[in-house]
Length: 425
Image 1 (cartoon, rainbow, N blue to C red):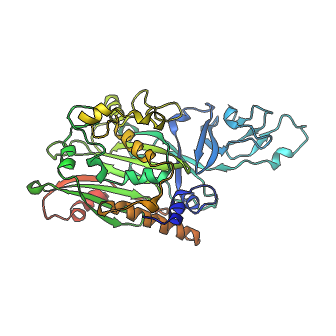
Image 2: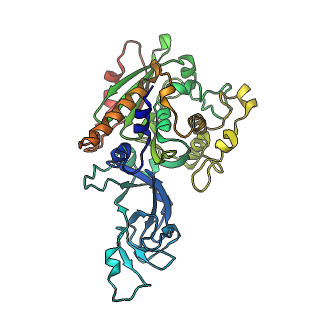
Image 3: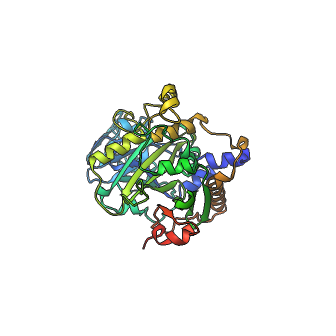
């Protein structure tokens, strides 16, 4: 459990908060590049770390990220005209460039130099991996670029989507690093029904529902393994990464007989919108082999509950707390452990059901919660490092790390056996 004070420390991310100050030291995803598809396209609203912002792609293709409200009378620049290298407020015509400079004030006399005194808050942005990222630190200490492996593969070998989750970012992240829940929450009671991917590891997870967890701390977060003993078959080992402050990676590689059937990695980025909402960036990529086909992407998104019609235009799920995540009690009796369709819908349902910010002073953690315990300690230490004026972990370089899953013989130590795959050269 956590004290109420520590729970506040690791959940509150607004401007000036210790957690918010930590997160502002990293590159933060703020939009899919496809949301700003071309120069002078409509701007979009962005909410991150409690700030209401607006993003736009100017006439030269640069992406600007500005505070949402015009400096004149406070009208939303989401309503603005994106034209001729700037975003123009529709109220009185004030126009801003991607750096927040006021370029024009057509309602002021031409000889007036008032515009030179006006500047909106703006944040630098980059694009990589089909994602727009921003640095919100404002201190000149810009970290290394987020060159994760998935951002460097061909666009044909990756897919990124996003989903609005209606709870605090930390309970979403904690679900992402909790390997043990998959033996229950995502279990199909019959094969060939929604929620059952029928590729072999589902059976292993049910056969060994209480995996052993081993965590190794690193200078970017930690790598950990969920180890399921399968008797004479050996150990099914699934290796995850937690990378500061909100990245997780896990493998999806084994076929029904333990053979490698696709070199595929999945992951999430759990980005706080405010203290009671987060935007989840869902990613998958292949570091080798064939490109994704449209059919494969469609099947994966449907399996996870992100298929056509399952999200609104603002990325909210149509299965949500207002309709009890469309739980089907008949399906719960006969087809799936939860009665909720979609793997990520199942995740979101239990995490959102805890309330906007769960009270961790009331929980009772066990041996299966080693990754959660390690993450909280690592995160708390990083917050205190930044509070004392130091640099947080994982900002000087981005590491080439890879999630792995393997069936290993009994007696083989997982890290030694898989080191070269976990940290490929």
